[in-house]
Image: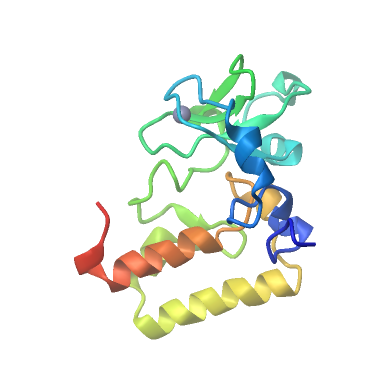
Length: 172
Ligand SMILES: [Zn+2]
């Protein structure tokens, strides 16, 4: 139990990258994006299958990783670097690739966009976080099938809120 985040399986907890999962760190070491050379985040097979817009005949029996580099067009790649799927081959627009686009989802399960967060008052932001937490707790999320990163969005939501509420400390 200690090797997992607090989320249920449908929130993608097997591939959550909250700090609890130390073992993933060593596993990731070799998993570099063939395009940008950065380390990818492990995703489950069902995430790749759910999010690709190309024929699933392309999906191999491989470990796939998610590239979160904003300027890199690759979304998923195989651990051996042989295969890569780009933003054009994915059914959803990807938050990590377009973190400033108002109409891109930051929470894919409960449909909260970047613009929703940007337009929200402090009170409304708390309500959004509450909505997401409640949804996760009652098992209504499907982050492994909906969110391109294959795991829960809360980390992204929390850091965006932090940026919004402390503009002076914002990291560019
Ligand atoms: Zn990349």
